[in-house]
Length: 541
Image (tube, rainbow, N blue to C red; front, top):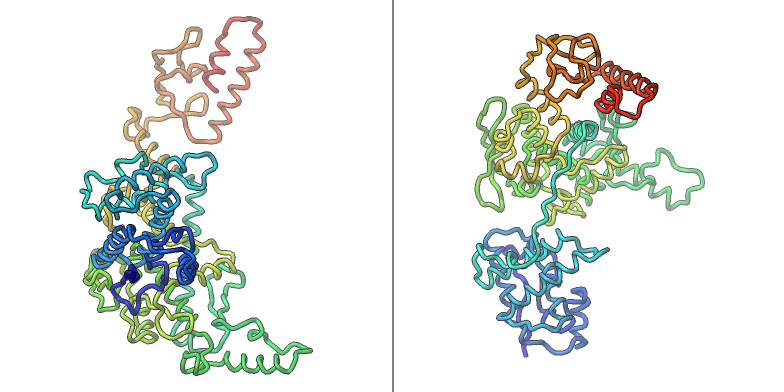
């Protein structure tokens, strides 16, 4: 029998992600193929170690292949395919090991069985599979299989299982943690701006190592040395005594590579100066994310066409081309950022004259633009640079989250913040807004200031260092034996309608001292019955 073609076909075959044998569903035609690593499975298939093809599996695999290719044609990212396939491998392994039928007619039943298996496994004590991961796996398969079986969205397969979406409530952020988070973000922003300013076109061509001045207080020595990929031997200031002849030759070659160049091509003595270009692009990319609040994936897909600026108060609305979308996309920037953006575009035009991308990158050999462009995803070089200089690394996701919450705190307007972050108010609340202790304190203080019947100007100092309006009035639940409020006896203040706590150390000290004195007074009373001093102590606890 001729082996059918089950390789996932990408739209742009020349620049398709190199997933190799992982994109080929052929191995699932063989029993045991899902339990092996893709490359190992195909080696065993080549020598006949997995037996004959199971033809009853062909209909299901062809349907899955067609569905994934349809998603690519519909505009889904090619980077989503590995996620789909990794999830599908688990399902196929489950069917293989349980000797289930691979018939397309049994697909719905098999999915429900697999979902129940994930549900039970995720709730076992010590299981490595969390309920959240179990739901994501099942939801992914539900989407694929539901499309194959033409099941309407209103009756999704995942809704027929016991798996439920795990919604993690955002944790409250203390004032100290919030301050530290903002400080780390500001430090990162200042560092990125200094690096981007220091990596000019002239600096890339200039002598190495490149010395970039950094504003005071960020890094030790207030400068960063960049050596464009040269090794430690090549950075030595002078030849070391006892070096062998070969090392001395390498040193002299290194000295030559450290000189200024007119071309950064490795073949023309440019060392690895494309490292510096990539570093500048990554710095500008992170600054761009901070300025616009755009999603990392959206920003990476921006095309390099003409930018159209439209004034919007103290900001610009910018329109440019987006590659994957095949049309224009808009974002908003502060007016002061425009000169930085234009300087960066001139930098990119010089080093990447033919690139269609707004944020292009050299590949690992310095030969033009990288296909995967992982530098704009993982930022390995920058993370190492931050670690080397003792700076905290703030991921693009954390940066976007911090920016949204900072805007929300400054504006106090969820609608405006959601509009500036380019999503709905519901998404803002569910995905981004973090409960803030600082905001809560401000809002509580603002609420009581607005609804307190005693106006701020009418407050006076009370006998226990708190506040009141000087008009004693007893509360309804004042216990018997306690004196009525009289602006003379401190105990009366505690049951006065007009008593107000204040946020001061003097007040805390006054309350603590008063409680201590009342505790001594209560201990001196020889009675088994509750005395007024006991009531006051309980009130102060």
